[in-house]
Image 1 (cartoon, rainbow, N blue to C red):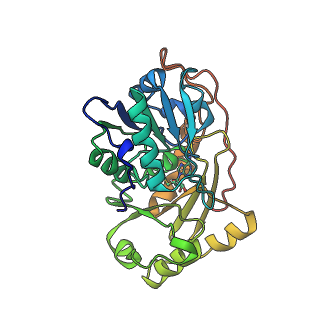
Image 2: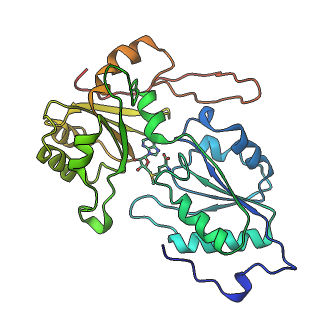
Length: 293
Ligand SMILES: C[S@@+](CC[C@H](N)C(=O)[O-])C[C@H]1O[C@@H](n2cnc3c(N)ncnc32)[C@H](O)[C@@H]1O
């Protein structure tokens, strides 16, 4: 990885002890899925450097004294480059005791948390990770899709569908994934879906294999599109389905009608969550644009 360029006054010295940077996973959006440890850190934080996918109810948990710094990272809108973010965190740790780096989902799952931690460790800044619930598990769950099931899938692969600079990413071996994994969970796959579907079809994944796209999962605006490998591209075009979404490919998607119908908590994100009382005061439904079930 590219290490951030540090100027001499960026480097912590013996008489300037840095604070701690906490890499905190915010989960996929529903504030009820945020960890108690993460919430306690938001209570204490002096500074919070947050990504674009962190949901508004979680940002609202930050104590009012904290300085809020957006670090961007929606597609095509990179507010700060990755080395700039690491350098920013180092600087903030020199000036403050508790710096929270708040990321969507889990910091170490397609979140560049590992890279940021490397940079902080190399600069001598104390750093701790606070895992979050990753979208690849929670978002399908809120759509009634378990990523494994003894009768449907004993293996799951989490893979990024993100392509660099508008080009198909050739280093992902889709054929190996199609052969070796009964469930495929794709992050950042919507923009590259045409290439991914072609690669999986070339790898002889049957055209009738079910696929679910779930957008803004666990949030009140959650939407789902259910189709097959053969039909998904036309469905995306017809519905205008857009990122950010998780794609789930495999027979576990077939469980969705039973599970979503039988479990009122599924696909109904909490709009508020009182951690102290563990109460779910208000429940809202989610829209669905499902076409297969
Ligand atoms: C840069 S990755 C970050 C993943 C994150 N670290 C995690 O563990 O969930 C961003 C991608 O995660 C997926 N994602 C994150 N939150 C989501 C949500 N609430 N609903 C659907 N997809 C989501 C989308 O594929 C999005 O493009």
